[in-house]
Image (tube, rainbow, N blue to C red; front, side, top):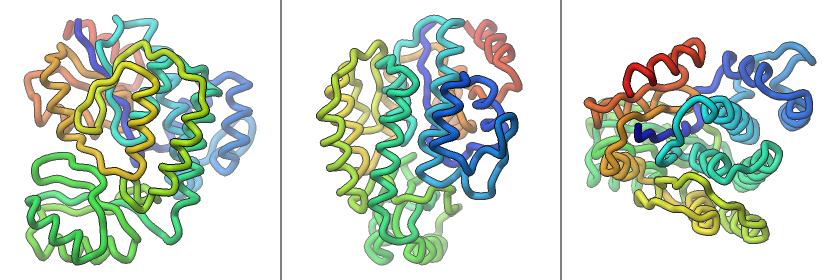
Length: 306
Protein backbone atom coordinates (compact mmCIF):
# COMPACT_ATOMS: atom_id res chain seq x y z
CA UNK A 1 0.00 0.00 0.00
CA UNK A 2 1.36 3.42 -0.97
CA UNK A 3 -0.36 5.88 1.35
CA UNK A 4 -0.19 9.67 1.50
CA UNK A 5 -1.50 11.63 4.49
CA UNK A 6 -2.97 15.12 4.14
CA UNK A 7 -2.87 17.52 7.09
CA UNK A 8 -5.81 19.96 6.97
CA UNK A 9 -5.68 23.69 7.62
CA UNK A 10 -7.86 26.03 9.66
CA UNK A 11 -11.57 26.72 9.46
CA UNK A 12 -13.44 23.47 10.20
CA UNK A 13 -12.46 22.80 13.82
CA UNK A 14 -15.29 22.50 16.33
CA UNK A 15 -16.63 21.15 19.61
CA UNK A 16 -16.09 17.47 18.75
CA UNK A 17 -12.40 18.19 18.23
CA UNK A 18 -12.10 19.92 21.61
CA UNK A 19 -13.57 16.82 23.26
CA UNK A 20 -11.21 14.57 21.29
CA UNK A 21 -8.17 16.60 22.31
CA UNK A 22 -9.17 16.44 25.98
CA UNK A 23 -9.59 12.67 25.71
CA UNK A 24 -6.29 11.99 23.94
CA UNK A 25 -3.85 14.30 25.71
CA UNK A 26 -1.91 13.45 28.85
CA UNK A 27 -2.29 15.43 32.07
CA UNK A 28 0.93 17.30 31.33
CA UNK A 29 -0.11 18.07 27.74
CA UNK A 30 -3.50 19.31 28.93
CA UNK A 31 -1.77 21.67 31.33
CA UNK A 32 0.26 23.07 28.42
CA UNK A 33 -2.67 23.64 26.10
CA UNK A 34 -5.00 24.97 28.81
CA UNK A 35 -2.35 27.48 29.78
CA UNK A 36 -1.98 28.49 26.13
CA UNK A 37 -5.72 28.43 25.30
CA UNK A 38 -7.61 29.04 28.59
CA UNK A 39 -10.72 30.49 26.91
CA UNK A 40 -11.32 27.18 25.16
CA UNK A 41 -11.78 25.14 28.33
CA UNK A 42 -14.44 25.58 31.02
CA UNK A 43 -12.81 23.53 33.78
CA UNK A 44 -10.59 20.55 34.40
CA UNK A 45 -13.00 17.94 33.06
CA UNK A 46 -15.10 19.70 30.45
CA UNK A 47 -14.78 22.02 27.50
CA UNK A 48 -16.64 24.99 26.14
CA UNK A 49 -17.09 26.10 22.58
CA UNK A 50 -16.60 29.81 23.18
CA UNK A 51 -18.12 31.35 20.08
CA UNK A 52 -15.44 32.46 17.67
CA UNK A 53 -12.61 31.71 20.11
CA UNK A 54 -11.62 28.48 18.39
CA UNK A 55 -11.09 30.37 15.13
CA UNK A 56 -8.78 32.99 16.63
CA UNK A 57 -5.42 32.50 14.97
CA UNK A 58 -3.34 32.19 18.15
CA UNK A 59 -5.70 29.47 19.40
CA UNK A 60 -6.58 27.75 16.12
CA UNK A 61 -3.00 27.00 15.09
CA UNK A 62 -1.76 25.24 18.26
CA UNK A 63 -5.15 23.59 18.75
CA UNK A 64 -5.15 22.00 15.28
CA UNK A 65 -1.53 20.97 15.75
CA UNK A 66 -2.53 19.19 18.97
CA UNK A 67 -5.39 17.39 17.23
CA UNK A 68 -3.31 16.27 14.26
CA UNK A 69 -0.28 15.31 16.34
CA UNK A 70 -2.31 12.92 18.48
CA UNK A 71 -4.21 11.49 15.53
CA UNK A 72 -0.88 10.68 13.89
CA UNK A 73 0.45 9.08 17.08
CA UNK A 74 -2.56 6.74 17.03
CA UNK A 75 -2.59 6.03 13.30
CA UNK A 76 1.14 5.37 12.88
CA UNK A 77 0.86 2.29 15.10
CA UNK A 78 -1.91 0.78 12.96
CA UNK A 79 -0.92 1.38 9.32
CA UNK A 80 2.03 1.00 7.01
CA UNK A 81 4.44 3.92 6.84
CA UNK A 82 3.15 6.59 4.41
CA UNK A 83 5.25 7.36 1.34
CA UNK A 84 4.70 11.09 1.92
CA UNK A 85 2.85 13.76 3.86
CA UNK A 86 1.30 16.94 2.49
CA UNK A 87 -0.32 19.83 4.34
CA UNK A 88 -2.68 22.63 3.43
CA UNK A 89 -1.54 25.97 4.86
CA UNK A 90 -1.09 25.43 8.62
CA UNK A 91 -1.25 21.70 7.91
CA UNK A 92 2.19 21.69 6.31
CA UNK A 93 4.03 22.79 9.45
CA UNK A 94 2.05 20.20 11.42
CA UNK A 95 3.07 17.58 8.87
CA UNK A 96 6.66 18.72 9.34
CA UNK A 97 6.44 18.31 13.12
CA UNK A 98 5.14 14.76 12.68
CA UNK A 99 7.70 13.86 10.02
CA UNK A 100 10.55 15.21 12.14
CA UNK A 101 9.18 13.30 15.14
CA UNK A 102 9.34 16.35 17.37
CA UNK A 103 7.95 15.64 20.79
CA UNK A 104 4.56 17.20 21.50
CA UNK A 105 5.88 20.18 23.43
CA UNK A 106 8.59 21.04 20.88
CA UNK A 107 6.07 20.98 18.04
CA UNK A 108 3.55 22.97 20.06
CA UNK A 109 6.17 25.63 20.77
CA UNK A 110 7.11 25.88 17.08
CA UNK A 111 3.50 26.21 15.92
CA UNK A 112 2.60 28.63 18.72
CA UNK A 113 5.55 30.83 17.77
CA UNK A 114 4.37 30.90 14.15
CA UNK A 115 0.86 31.87 15.26
CA UNK A 116 2.13 34.54 17.64
CA UNK A 117 4.34 36.20 15.02
CA UNK A 118 1.55 36.17 12.45
CA UNK A 119 -0.92 37.68 14.93
CA UNK A 120 1.54 40.44 15.80
CA UNK A 121 1.74 41.34 12.11
CA UNK A 122 -2.02 41.94 11.78
CA UNK A 123 -2.53 45.70 12.05
CA UNK A 124 -6.26 45.73 11.19
CA UNK A 125 -9.11 43.20 11.07
CA UNK A 126 -8.20 40.84 8.26
CA UNK A 127 -9.02 37.43 6.87
CA UNK A 128 -9.53 35.19 3.87
CA UNK A 129 -12.16 34.94 1.13
CA UNK A 130 -12.82 31.90 -1.05
CA UNK A 131 -13.63 32.68 -4.69
CA UNK A 132 -14.82 30.11 -7.24
CA UNK A 133 -15.51 30.59 -10.91
CA UNK A 134 -13.07 33.32 -11.96
CA UNK A 135 -10.24 32.88 -14.44
CA UNK A 136 -6.75 34.19 -13.70
CA UNK A 137 -7.20 37.40 -15.70
CA UNK A 138 -10.41 38.24 -13.82
CA UNK A 139 -8.72 37.44 -10.53
CA UNK A 140 -5.87 39.83 -11.29
CA UNK A 141 -8.41 42.59 -11.95
CA UNK A 142 -10.20 41.82 -8.70
CA UNK A 143 -6.99 41.86 -6.63
CA UNK A 144 -5.82 45.12 -8.16
CA UNK A 145 -9.09 46.97 -7.72
CA UNK A 146 -9.77 45.84 -4.15
CA UNK A 147 -6.21 45.92 -2.76
CA UNK A 148 -6.34 42.24 -1.84
CA UNK A 149 -3.81 39.47 -2.45
CA UNK A 150 -3.72 35.91 -3.70
CA UNK A 151 -3.24 33.55 -0.75
CA UNK A 152 -3.83 30.04 -2.14
CA UNK A 153 -4.57 28.64 -5.59
CA UNK A 154 -6.89 25.66 -5.17
CA UNK A 155 -7.92 25.03 -8.78
CA UNK A 156 -7.87 26.52 -12.25
CA UNK A 157 -10.72 28.84 -11.28
CA UNK A 158 -10.75 28.53 -7.49
CA UNK A 159 -8.69 30.72 -5.19
CA UNK A 160 -8.33 32.00 -1.64
CA UNK A 161 -7.60 35.71 -1.39
CA UNK A 162 -6.52 37.71 1.65
CA UNK A 163 -6.72 41.26 2.89
CA UNK A 164 -8.33 43.64 5.33
CA UNK A 165 -11.96 42.73 6.01
CA UNK A 166 -13.29 45.93 4.42
CA UNK A 167 -11.38 45.16 1.23
CA UNK A 168 -12.54 41.54 1.28
CA UNK A 169 -16.17 42.66 1.41
CA UNK A 170 -15.51 44.83 -1.65
CA UNK A 171 -13.77 41.89 -3.32
CA UNK A 172 -16.74 39.63 -2.64
CA UNK A 173 -19.12 42.09 -4.31
CA UNK A 174 -16.82 42.57 -7.31
CA UNK A 175 -16.27 38.82 -7.68
CA UNK A 176 -20.01 38.29 -7.92
CA UNK A 177 -20.24 41.08 -10.49
CA UNK A 178 -17.49 39.41 -12.51
CA UNK A 179 -19.45 36.15 -12.53
CA UNK A 180 -18.01 34.13 -9.66
CA UNK A 181 -20.04 30.98 -8.93
CA UNK A 182 -19.46 31.16 -5.22
CA UNK A 183 -17.76 33.37 -2.62
CA UNK A 184 -17.34 32.74 1.09
CA UNK A 185 -15.57 34.51 3.93
CA UNK A 186 -13.55 31.94 5.86
CA UNK A 187 -13.13 31.43 9.60
CA UNK A 188 -9.51 32.61 9.56
CA UNK A 189 -8.41 35.88 11.14
CA UNK A 190 -5.06 36.55 9.44
CA UNK A 191 -4.14 37.36 5.80
CA UNK A 192 -1.97 34.27 5.51
CA UNK A 193 0.52 33.67 2.68
CA UNK A 194 0.69 37.27 1.49
CA UNK A 195 3.13 40.15 1.72
CA UNK A 196 1.01 41.51 4.58
CA UNK A 197 2.83 38.85 6.67
CA UNK A 198 6.36 39.82 5.61
CA UNK A 199 7.58 40.84 9.07
CA UNK A 200 6.22 37.61 10.57
CA UNK A 201 7.99 35.56 7.91
CA UNK A 202 11.33 37.25 8.60
CA UNK A 203 11.03 36.74 12.36
CA UNK A 204 9.98 33.11 11.96
CA UNK A 205 12.94 32.48 9.66
CA UNK A 206 15.29 33.92 12.28
CA UNK A 207 13.62 31.78 14.94
CA UNK A 208 13.95 28.54 12.96
CA UNK A 209 17.53 29.33 11.88
CA UNK A 210 18.49 29.01 15.56
CA UNK A 211 16.85 25.58 15.93
CA UNK A 212 18.72 22.31 16.17
CA UNK A 213 17.73 20.54 12.96
CA UNK A 214 15.78 17.32 13.48
CA UNK A 215 15.82 14.45 10.96
CA UNK A 216 12.70 14.07 8.84
CA UNK A 217 11.38 10.50 8.62
CA UNK A 218 8.75 11.05 5.91
CA UNK A 219 9.14 13.36 2.89
CA UNK A 220 6.65 16.19 2.42
CA UNK A 221 5.06 17.27 -0.84
CA UNK A 222 4.84 21.02 -0.41
CA UNK A 223 2.21 23.54 -1.44
CA UNK A 224 5.19 25.64 -2.50
CA UNK A 225 5.39 24.70 -6.19
CA UNK A 226 4.77 21.02 -5.46
CA UNK A 227 8.34 20.57 -4.20
CA UNK A 228 9.06 17.30 -2.39
CA UNK A 229 11.51 17.83 0.45
CA UNK A 230 13.38 15.44 2.69
CA UNK A 231 15.42 17.58 5.09
CA UNK A 232 14.46 19.79 8.00
CA UNK A 233 16.67 22.63 6.78
CA UNK A 234 14.90 22.81 3.43
CA UNK A 235 11.53 22.30 5.08
CA UNK A 236 11.93 25.15 7.56
CA UNK A 237 13.12 27.47 4.78
CA UNK A 238 10.01 26.62 2.77
CA UNK A 239 7.71 26.97 5.78
CA UNK A 240 9.15 30.40 6.59
CA UNK A 241 8.67 31.53 3.00
CA UNK A 242 5.07 30.34 2.95
CA UNK A 243 4.06 32.83 5.61
CA UNK A 244 4.33 35.76 3.19
CA UNK A 245 4.13 34.00 -0.20
CA UNK A 246 1.08 32.45 -1.86
CA UNK A 247 0.59 28.69 -1.98
CA UNK A 248 -0.32 26.53 -4.97
CA UNK A 249 -2.37 23.71 -3.51
CA UNK A 250 -3.51 22.72 -7.01
CA UNK A 251 0.09 22.04 -8.02
CA UNK A 252 0.60 20.12 -4.78
CA UNK A 253 -2.36 17.88 -5.64
CA UNK A 254 -1.02 17.36 -9.17
CA UNK A 255 2.33 16.31 -7.71
CA UNK A 256 0.55 13.91 -5.36
CA UNK A 257 -1.20 12.44 -8.40
CA UNK A 258 2.15 11.91 -10.15
CA UNK A 259 3.33 9.70 -7.27
CA UNK A 260 0.31 7.45 -7.86
CA UNK A 261 -0.58 6.60 -4.27
CA UNK A 262 -2.97 3.72 -3.73
CA UNK A 263 -4.78 5.59 -0.94
CA UNK A 264 -5.00 9.03 0.68
CA UNK A 265 -6.18 9.86 4.21
CA UNK A 266 -6.99 13.39 5.34
CA UNK A 267 -6.18 13.94 9.01
CA UNK A 268 -8.82 16.63 9.58
CA UNK A 269 -10.36 18.72 10.99
CA UNK A 270 -13.04 18.54 8.34
CA UNK A 271 -12.99 16.87 4.94
CA UNK A 272 -12.35 19.75 2.54
CA UNK A 273 -9.09 18.29 1.23
CA UNK A 274 -10.48 14.82 0.60
CA UNK A 275 -13.33 16.37 -1.39
CA UNK A 276 -10.78 18.23 -3.53
CA UNK A 277 -8.82 15.01 -4.10
CA UNK A 278 -12.00 13.11 -4.98
CA UNK A 279 -12.89 15.75 -7.57
CA UNK A 280 -9.41 15.68 -9.12
CA UNK A 281 -8.74 11.93 -8.77
CA UNK A 282 -12.12 10.17 -8.53
CA UNK A 283 -10.51 6.75 -9.08
CA UNK A 284 -8.35 7.05 -5.95
CA UNK A 285 -9.65 5.96 -2.51
CA UNK A 286 -9.55 9.06 -0.31
CA UNK A 287 -11.39 9.74 2.95
CA UNK A 288 -11.03 12.02 5.93
CA UNK A 289 -10.63 10.92 9.54
CA UNK A 290 -13.69 13.09 10.27
CA UNK A 291 -15.83 10.97 7.92
CA UNK A 292 -15.84 8.31 10.64
CA UNK A 293 -17.19 8.36 14.19
CA UNK A 294 -14.27 6.30 15.47
CA UNK A 295 -10.81 5.32 14.27
CA UNK A 296 -12.04 1.72 13.93
CA UNK A 297 -14.26 2.83 11.04
CA UNK A 298 -11.30 4.46 9.33
CA UNK A 299 -9.18 1.33 9.78
CA UNK A 300 -11.96 -0.86 8.35
CA UNK A 301 -12.08 1.41 5.29
CA UNK A 302 -8.29 1.18 4.94
CA UNK A 303 -8.42 -2.63 5.10
CA UNK A 304 -11.16 -2.80 2.45
CA UNK A 305 -9.25 -0.55 0.06
CA UNK A 306 -5.75 -2.04 0.33
